[in-house]
Length: 396
Image 1: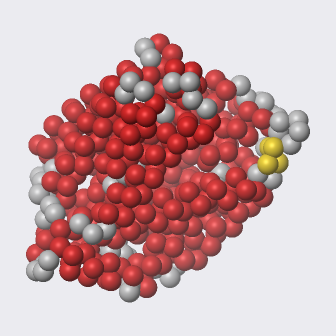
Image 2 (image 1 turned 60 degrees about the vertical axis):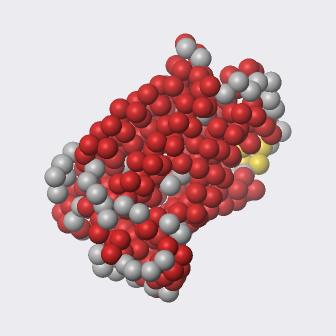
């Protein structure tokens, strides 16, 4: 395939911009609340409008994603994402901001599934772990830069500039994608109507025990991670003694490391075996999960060691996991499967965060209690995911 060497880097850039668009909202919260004079309920609505629209688009994509050339689908969705991001920066009031964020999620929510489907179609199995590792550095880079960059730009230039910057950079990536991504249409040889093929694709997924195991496997992994991730920052401030500005150190250190370790883990997965690589990284990830959820006031340096381990191993185990999950899907229905996977992952993330919120509670002195219980749940689901993996077969 022409441009095979450079294509994963372009896809990683697209992943970076879509994740950055979501991550950069978090540190800008105080500005939005002050400028638009909104309370916690409206702010949570702004945040959830993106994720809700992303879930809707992921579900809708189940019925049409395999009916189109994946290159054309990606370029269309990415163009919509860029336009919506510009509209976010132009929003004059909170209601139009809410609508613009929902529109951004509608387009951005399906891009991740498209990227993995393209990698699955264009990159052969023996090289797929490396390619996915490179693509997933986009998430790592966004995680490491989103919070500190959001704070810096929001304070210096204002919140609107942050979204104009993302949209401008995305336009450059769009040009590269248009030139470098080849047609991805080998899956389009089936005859029949769009609805017929969509139903056929869904049936092919839900009647395949191997693919159902792959979906359960992914849900367990993200459940173990996202029951913990939303509460790391508040726990560090309330229980460990971090200042809010010091939270940027966690994202900078951990995210920066994963930029380098993710491609490395991808190479190891290809060379040593994806099952074995996941098993080792899963076991290593249990160490920081336990440490973070049991942490008491200690020097920042020690916190950064364990938080960076969490970033590195949690992101690392997703690489062989994603490669294995992609390999369970038949190429003709890979888009449908990846869309269903996207919806399942979103539901897993939402349920994990909600359940963790029910378990954790604030004590009268402002500290958080029961984070240790959430840690044990994260450890348990991680271990169970490995036994599910052992029953899966990577056929494609």
